[in-house]
View: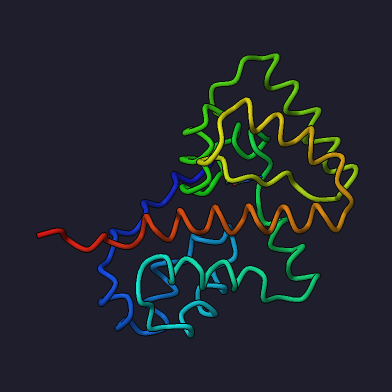
Length: 183
Ligand code: GUN
């Protein structure tokens, strides 16, 4: 049976994040890079952050800080969109929420079949899952992006995937930081 997704942590104020131990920081941001919690330690060492965007940038830089093999492993840590893990209820809470926000949990049978073909073609060509920041897209642009990116070279595609992972991470980081109160 699939485990229920763990709840997302309560957002913390920037000053509190800057003061956390590395362990506590890593626990708070463990879900920012899919199935890759160790990057939160890399980001933690860039503190203090002047604002939430600076914290997001630290994660984007952490995602690119690895060797080419580590970058590929990070891309491969992502499940296929509308894939088997989604059908089996085995996504992380973050991925499930993001996929649902773009309607990927409510595709018609034809759309599921088309996604299956695109995901398969993608794996065949690049040996990678198709990663896109679904919260910055809708169903139509997610489909169009897959078709367009299938024309990439492997180098272009690794760059595109890391760019999207940075966009995904940014939104997840911003969700985990309490905005300064306006008063
Ligand atoms: N974009 C946002 N979340 C995900 C994910 O979990 N997997 C893939 N492939 N793309 C994503």
